[in-house]
Image (cartoon, rainbow over all chains, first blue to last red; front, side, top):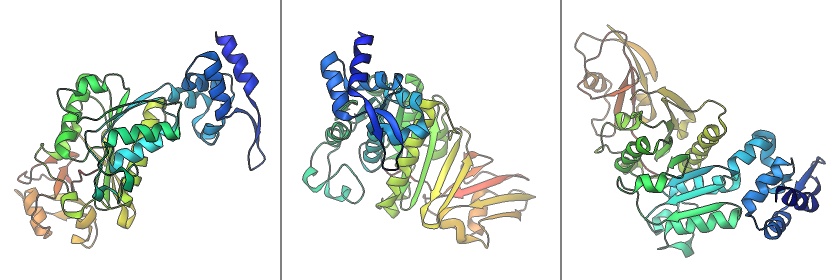
Length: 283
Length: 75
């Protein structure tokens, strides 16, 4: 089976020349699709097999110098849950799809409304009243058909969280209220996976990676009745894009075990003055 | 006693520098410090003392480092 797949991959691969004149051995989207169809495997498995042969799926070529071939393969073997498919979540989903994270679970019971259009990348005028989780899954499939995406058009609760998150290695907090973020922090202790936290208010935002059982977030917010400054400053266009990108960077660092994750500290961003501060935190 | 104060976001301009050391009398609370800086008394302010979130009634000690910023929770 493996040798048959490898032969197919080699057959559909070829020398690829980039716009800057570099050459590498790659396999394009139609090649991956043919391998998958002829070998009876998923496109995701075909891409992983290609990378193991050091044949680069063209769609990931621009990632490889930074992520490495093994890193790209590891991302394709990884599973990430995104809770919330709004301002932060839509952008997180977009980036995870392009990055090539192999399995994505989207959880959100909400539907798009007109005041989402300012910042929620999944929301187009035609999508008003549609389920955010469903639109998110469609977006994933449209960007990267190799990804196995599952969506749950329900809100996360203390009761359903363990089941919804149990198949993921890490969960991205893309929620919009402090009280439910604290619930999420509580349940990651039961599931045993880290949570990448991101939140916005006006042109302010924050990011942190929270390990299960640390209790850092509930300590920071000081209880579930806490209120964020977004109630006053709103959630303008730019802020979610910055915070979502930083959240996905935390996911990359965790999955590939590299860099310096924001553990036990908060990155606090003041976009208006371009000031990013790292603040140590204890639970 | 001496305390180190770091201000963020909208509170940055409450003092001539957003990061400064200040003398304070024994018994000074976080709220006293916030009031002395004329920070607006709303729920939208929070303080960490030595990396731990504290209530505003917390009494400061010599050498404490205080971060004061606005909580964010939107998405």
